[in-house]
Length: 267
Image (cartoon, rainbow, N blue to C red; front, side, top):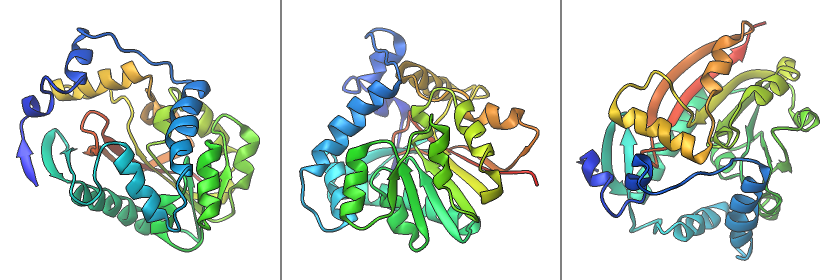
């Protein structure tokens, strides 16, 4: 793993160099139609064309379709405000080790991932796992390879009824698709007696970012219409205790970094 400069990352070949400065126009509206087009009808529909036997094969193909060779490819990642060039395989290992270590620490009888795609993270966690996913094509892939994934919409209150008693909930870069997290926390509250812990591995706007790189990250979130308020919705709730908080802990995409937020409903 080799450390590089921010200028090497945001070079002339990176389209975000001009987008973040307003030189090139870019703006998305993050609604259900955008999610449907970007994920269900594009990413997962393309993956569904392949007849693989294992979830790892689908993950490798997912990286290939994103232009990253899963074995020999290189990728730029971040830790805090530091940027590194490393192999795709090493970046994946670092990211999944982070996920697994926190789930192990806050484990329950059942582990549920919301917005789980075709269930790759569930396959790593192991037994007593289940998940919910908006994209119907991702659910089809999950069922094909034997993972317990149901159709799920963050905006639909009744969809949360599938949460089992004695569950740890986690999300991984899925709440980023929901500009306002209020609806999610309100819906989880109605299932709070079943939920022991909630773990978020999520990008979101962090108002306390003051470095130039931090401000670029907030601008990136704004232009993509990603989540703006997950952390602040949680902080404003008197019935929620935040157990762990680490900002910009890791970034498979340095502008779209993972923040770690772990919390529970107060009993």
